[in-house]
Length: 326
Image 1 (cartoon, rainbow, N blue to C red):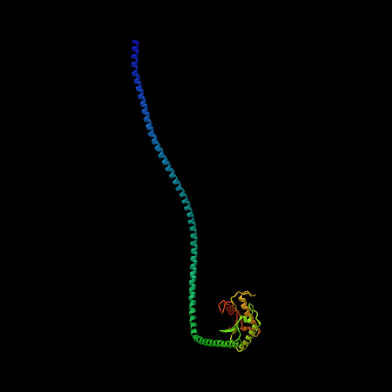
Image 2 (image 1 turned 135 degrees about the vertical axis):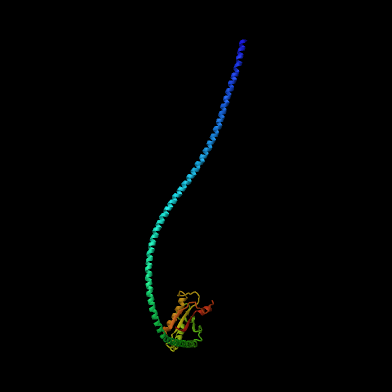
């Protein structure tokens, strides 16, 4: 019993020590945890500060990189500017050299112009002297002109008189030619007054082509030969009376209609001209001087009738004789 009491009492005495030890250990643990938490807090704050510092450094590095890029760009631009300035400087030097040469050339030209001006002044002086001589000669010529003015007026009066006489003579010759033409056409009118296809129109004696030529041909028919020979005899009688001083001519005009041609001739130009030439050749053969004959062809461009009937075409196919001056 006593032992049991002693053991029980000994156990009760050890328990407060354990409690104290545990309390101390707990306090140590709490202190350690508190230190750890505080350390973590301080470490977290320090890390955050360092992180912000790192970010700021990164921003600064980026800014520095940007600034470096800008500086590099500026440096490149400066290099280009320097190169441009060098080129401009070289160009300016070349221009300066060219301007120097131009100045030298201008100076030489100025000197040359000065010499030319001096020579021109001398020429002006010489021309002034010559002008004075010309004035003196002109004065002498004017005096001579005044003397000859009367002679010129006399000659002008003579020229006017001659012109008047010439006009009168020409009018007289035209009147004579008109009289002979009227006589010639009058005789032909009397001879051929009943001949169909023959008529006098104004100052022209007109034969219809059918009276002289077969259709589409430039060869005279037998009747046409007879008609032209009759005309030639009458013309011989009248032309013998025309003075040699009158420049007259008998013009033979060939005309066609505007119908398409179907013959050996290429066009109405050839046909009308060939017919006029045929008549002229026969007149020459009958003794009419070729110096007083002319053959012309008008094709279908001088119609008497603008109609499209067969009668109009027949009127336009004709040979005309006209006594006129040359």
